[in-house]
Length: 247
Image 1 (tube, helix red, strand yellow):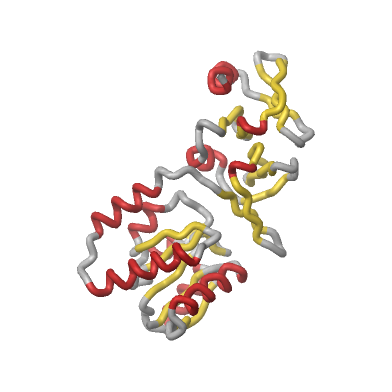
Image 2 (tube, rainbow, N blue to C red):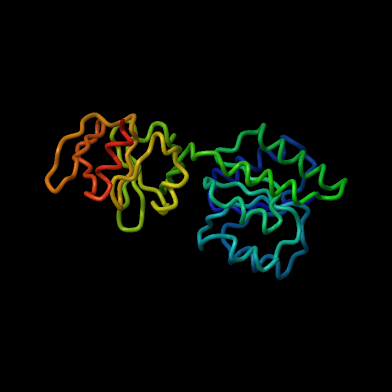
């Protein structure tokens, strides 16, 4: 059996490789590719493999623009930090969707699903229903990538999320700013509405980290987040809704 890994982070390549060899040391990992361009060039001169492990956000963008060309014919197990692409995954031969950090237990379940699909007719309707069911879960973690490490923040330990110049900044339980890549408008849809509220166009607060709320001019409110020095200000249009939410 031959597999291909599509992943742009060395630490994740290592984790997936370890899981594969632990599951079955006879599986051949043909290669690992880090970008859509590398995938496209590799398939020009190589045959299809039996199974692909693929990240979603690569060095040169979202992988689905390439996968929708049907360049990969075999089943794909997606390994990603984002829980917003379940339907896209189903549309391009996805059979499993593993959120990082990937546990060995969940990896094994994905591999068992792959094994079962090889020996019987695929019921794509059931797979689609299972995928949509997973999409009801709220986001539990935020992945912060730096030049030297991959940091995992729990959303429960995130006091606020700010948008700045097209990027997001998560304020952790220590008041430290952690920059990550995401659209705020997409993120708010994935967070538990009982805990998170978008107070203006660029700021989301976690109710469990609100330390103080004070009146601010223009029918707005100034919110103090635990261990974070700056005040966050509600927009006038959402102040009334915010008051109802905190009650």
